[in-house]
Length: 337
Image (cartoon, rainbow, N blue to C red):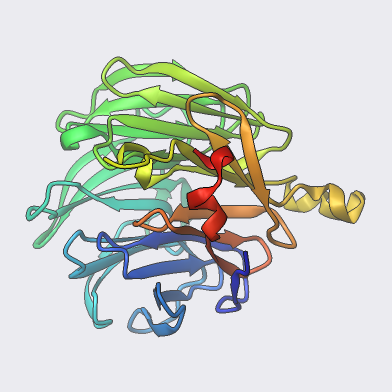
């Protein structure tokens, strides 16, 4: 498997995200660049830059199902909306250090985003607490703000099934489910022993998978919020994703991709090969490792399956984006069934 090595960022990657059709993906990093890439050729089509000052870091990016709007969550507390073609559409001065943003999932009615921010003290706004918020962006309007009920800062927050709930993950190993309309706490799950680092869903959002620094990934059924499977690896995990082919009509691939590696600050204190920066392929049902793919020169921060399940993209602490297309063997060999 020969990956494309894309050196399009100078600083660690924060998120890679495919659009709904899968013909483009968007990457964002701590250097403030947001790049739109073509999946087939891995060419950079362009970048999304805000009017005025360039953002110090961009922690998250999302794109609507019909690929008409892109939103970025900037570290300077601004939520910026772009047209897919690249022109800035609007900006919301959100406040705090924005850590995550996601459009709601209702096709044809994606007019809301959910965000979370860390607390921040500034001259202009005073003290902004840790919060989870829901915004309508056209026209810009605040719909919901959860701050007092929040135990600590949220790492990421995403929409649950049918936009009825919000799912947030925390550094103390908990997952909290909120009501998306009222902002009430529906359920608190003691999910992991270490900080929860990533969460991803299947297409219908009825299966959720989480990764953690405690070296485990867990698969959750979203109807009862119960843990169905646990995958115990040998490294801290930063991100995990379920193959989109897990429910394919013909030859489903019950596969899970995870990535991580020891923390960036500990890298220099150990031998070169022991950092464990490969991507891991695990079987979703049997809870066993199928294979590994050699990866970055530092921990892997984010990963995403291609929408057709034929490969994946990873982004690392080293500022590289790697695009892997799976070999023919993946589709023919017995051991990858």
